[in-house]
Length: 150
Image: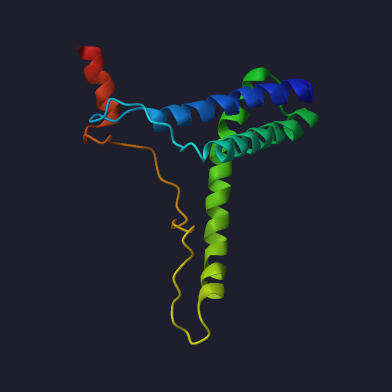
């Protein structure tokens, strides 16, 4: 498999993963009937830039594998593309966990008291796990079985 073909399959897989994530965020909860976008009007250009960068990095994950001959078919490249957003999220969480102590140390005043973190910092360095319950408190896995039964 040549590099261009592997990168295109990986981009297709990464795009599929990103669309699935957007679909999950936009889906209305049990109490709401309105689909909502995960961005406001002013945030849309930044969201598109971030999505473009993530897709570019997804292709960059597949290129070395194809260049070394480790990637043999399109399915393998597609799976690398699907896994790339998860890998990037894990790397970002690890980087945040490594950098957070240094940021806290730099923000603390010289007298040893604790300083408030910047307004843009709102995380604790953890990636949220898969959603086990929706807003109504029902188990998401059982919801599909209930719908099939009806």
